[in-house]
Image 1 (cartoon, rainbow, N blue to C red):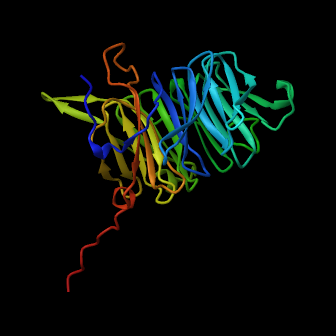
Image 2 (image 1 turned 90 degrees about the horizontal axis):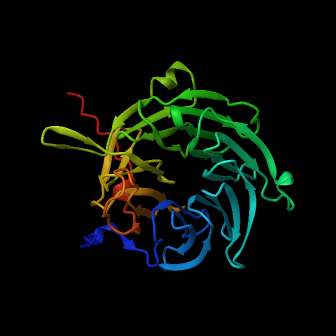
Length: 341
């Protein structure tokens, strides 16, 4: 029997994907939501109107998607292809290929380039304005230490997280080699990396219920600010049950962030003050992806089993869009005790 999620989960979008959600993203220009899935589709929703506006079918599962602008988007597929699709004309074309499934895709507004990361242990940069023909579109291929698991951009900075707990930091204006080569400060496999909106660092989550808060500036003063914290865990019969943290999404206005775990919970954190601000009611199954809308008023939540426990009966894949209350995401001012009179 399917559990009915509480009304506080937000509004469930109709026509959800028929298999696991690999990612979802709000547009930078509207409340349109792009969703990629293992059911081999990319879907475009109007999240406010709860309408499916478009659907693009691939030959294989789609592992990631992102907007170019409000009229077009890109996808990363398990068939090794990187595709572009134009929403209103239902046109799609292949921008290029990797030698293994493409795990991540990001569009850089700063560089006007598309960046893809693959399990072939490379990063590729593409100029989507290039004429037809992949040779003219491919800007460069950059070898990575391992398979690429997660990418994040802020301004001209690109953070690449790979298998083997490697983290490479690039400047998009000079991709010849990483600006910094790092190792994750977490002991277990990286699930997600997301840059701080203010450009000073990144948050990185692992399969073992932890998030690390990191800073780009290598000075001692900056590096002393880094820390990691435990989350998405519970104690049962005296032992700790630990869940993967699949998703991190920063609030565009306040710089606070939400995390989503395989425990079905979404938590909101104030990274500066090292405090949890809010925990939403439990979702039907694992949280596979999260995205705030451009103004931070909406939060899209993919409640979608991520097979961390293998094949088993699970709740249907669903996408919820919730209205965000300021109290859930706004940092609380620090209260200092009154000095003695």
